[in-house]
Image (cartoon, rainbow, N blue to C red):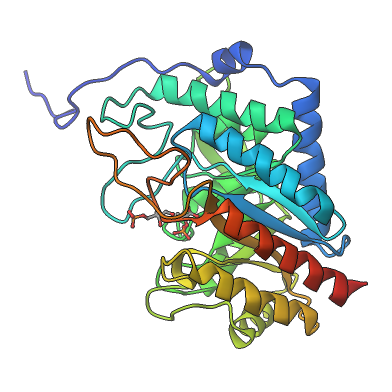
Length: 351
Ligand SMILES: O=C[C@H](O)[C@H](O)COP(=O)(O)O
Ligand SMILES: C=C(OP(=O)(O)O)C(=O)O
């Protein structure tokens, strides 16, 4: 016998199908209205029909659904008076792309202990998205695995393709078939042209291999996604790219590629150089730009949680409630004034 296959696969466990998960945790009428309404409003804002801005706000990752829902309710209440200027979309990120290795998110390892109960992670993820949608708050999420979206994309109003996967053809194919607007991050080194290429690619239809809801391998045909937008997140080689000059340069590059000059600025990651408090500086600059008539800025992204900072997961030590276990976040208390500042800038510029 000659064995050449699965030499480095140590085991395989059954995975539930998207259909079974959706049957257990079905999309109800209220949640469907939130998702559809969130998608339509985000599309209208990003395409310039609606003069407001989107604010994608929430923890770097979800590790404790209860804390996320607590955050969601508080964010929703704080944003209600800003509704004429800002559409809040909750960051609900379950799949974390790591620079090298580390915890890969609630779906991959929901018990945070290396037990990799992915079926349980999928249940938790879908349940938390349903609860957020039932609150009436639209959700944003990054699609990292190209098949896992089949389990929860119907609950997402804004999708993201991250800086580490923006050049990947399979992620562009995935985005071409997603039902919601999608943001493409510039590359980790700061390159914006790869994200523009991704937007252009995802506008086309593609044929690609995936999974049906019943879990069968299938060749899917997408029609192309006309709602792809650039997210400026700064980068290792170029530094931050939220400044007036960087925003103008990106808007010009989009127009040169025959794309709408519309973008979102991530106040975190390379733009805050991973110091959560610097998100406030980024937001101040964006508000000045909006007030000064910059039309390209249609959205912002903020990493925020109930408690400022981050913590490590240490076996046997209880986690601080509402504090990130991936990137450090601003506290919600410090985030709300930034959203108020943003709303004031939008009102002033676009009244
Ligand atoms: O947003 C989260 C992180 O920036 C990203 O997943 C990379 O994290 P890492 O560099 O800590 O692995
Ligand atoms: C991983 C993320 O961002 P980026 O792809 O910009 O590093 C994120 O937003 O969680």
